[in-house]
Structures are given as structure tokens and as C-alpha cells.
Length: 241
Image (cartoon, rainbow, N blue to C red):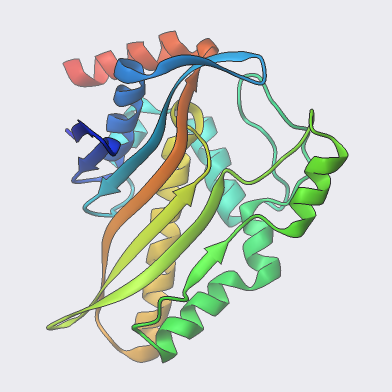
């Protein structure tokens, strides 16, 4: 299971797999989350939490055994094949219609950029995907009560040299994460995207590239009141098994 550490930097979670990292994040919120409101919705939340998984392997047995499968499929769809974003929260906070992560990646040729950049310059620190755009800010300004701004702000991919090739390190920043309903999908989709990029670069360059850790900072990780009981019961069953 994951390790949690409290100090002046807040809660930090380290685990061997993305599933255990996600479970550790959920448990940290259940144990230490502070009651607060989010646009009049009750929730518990922790701030500025760092989550790191030593690996990005998938499929992940922890995620598959605990999470809601329909929510997971939806989150993966928003990253890989669905063009329109919609809120899968039990109480949606925005109307469907905004561009999904997949749409943004495709429109901006973001993955193409990362693959080409790291294939040409493996040590580059510029292989970054950034999701919010000026269009999002304009849309939010038009309606502050029915707005969408991507929760996942950025993902950076880095190749660090090893004796026999490279290890891909993936780092993300999320302004917000609905940990119970969406966090598993966020982490799994990032890992799957990392693996796709790794394979493409390896095919182009003929370098051996191993998928390394997933590391991220979440500014606000939370569980909404409507899901407290479900999260606690499923996490308890997981620990018991």
C-alpha cells in the first residue's frame, strides 16, 4: 500500500503502482480531508498533495477491483476517443459541449509534437502538453455558473538516460481532482498516453525506452459528500481483502 507523509509540504503519497497511488490518495482524503464547500457543494478536500507511482503499468488490478467501471471508461474516452467533454459527477457542474482532452490533443497535434521533440532531442525539457486555452477563459467569463476549465492542466514527458537506453518520466499538474469519481481515470489515462508516446519514440529512434514513474501535484483533491459512503465502503472492502 502507499506511504503518506505529513510535513510542511503537506501530504505526499508514494506507491509502487498507479492503482495503489490512487487508493492512497482516496484514503488520505477520507482520513485527513477538511470539510469545505465547492460552489455550494459539501465535500472533504486536501490541498497541494503530491502523488507518485514508481511504475505506470496497466491494466491495474487495484483500480479495476475498486472503481466504477463506467466512470473509468468515460474518463479514458475523454483522453483517447471522445471529442466532447461532459461531467460524469453524480451532480454535474457544467453542461456538455467543451472540447475533451482527446479533442485538444488532436487539434493541437500535442502528442505529435512530444514524439517528434523527444525523438530529435531526447534530453528536451519542452515535451509538455498544456490543456487550457484562451478559449476556455473566454467561455468561463461568459458564464461563471456553468463553466468548464480542464482539471488536468499539463503533462510533461522526459527521457532520462540509462546504460541500456532511456526511462520515460511523466509529470503532471492538476488544478483539481475529484479523486473518487475521476482520479483513477486521470492516472490511468496519463499512464496509457505515456506508454503510447514511449512506443512511438522507441520505434522511430530504435532506442530502448522503459516506462518509468508517474509523478504529479494536485492543487485540490477532494471527495464530494454524495460519495463519502461509497468511497469508505469500497476502500474498506479493498483493505479487508
